[in-house]
Length: 272
Image (cartoon, rainbow, N blue to C red; front, side, top):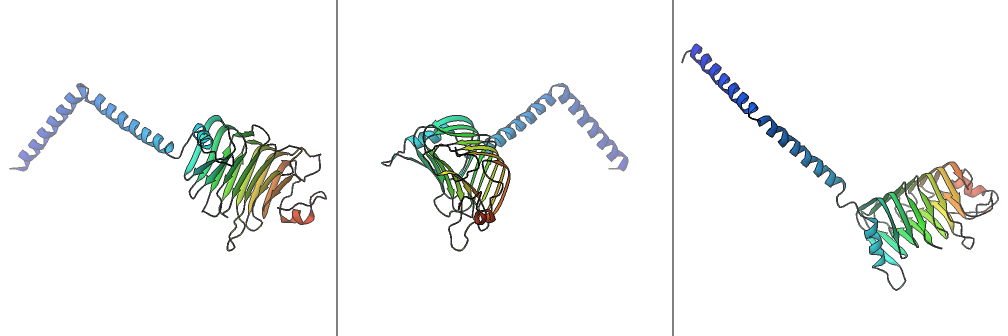
């Protein structure tokens, strides 16, 4: 075949392909293609949404139900959390005193939650790897004379509270400290734009946010503490960490590191 014949053959093939494409387009083939692309994009969006709200998320109703259905002879319900649990945009009540156990891999995040409860305890009960507890834009309120207790035991553990309220008359305690002899102390606490109340006159437990003296870090900003004590007395409030940074804290002096413990606060002797 000559070069001229080859070129003519290729040109004929191109013209035929172009005519076929024009016929397909006129028949609505492009609409089918657009529909397929939109369906594929929809599938991708669904997958992304499913991944975001998958097994890591839970409901306040489920949590309350598990507490209520597991009450033992001591009168307390018990719940085990062994994954990253996020509860968002819910209002509810835990009708019984409840202890939540964060096992290895168990994290807890409350976001825009209104929770009322009796005595409430959250703890990892010993060294079990990094644990995080986060409370954002939420209110945790007692339904009577009850307390709130959060205790974590690893140097890598952290607690963050932002734009939230804790109101438990008997106590609000948040403590992080590694108990292992080879890695004592540690922990990180951050509380910003929040209010904490514990004002029962018959309770001396009050409010505590404490990280380890060795390697512990704490930052408090725009925090309001109410213990029911006369102004200038701080027997029932304690903010402490090895590196402690208080800014605009009401209800507690603006110093909270080891040097403040040594010097005493306004004549009051307090210790972590």
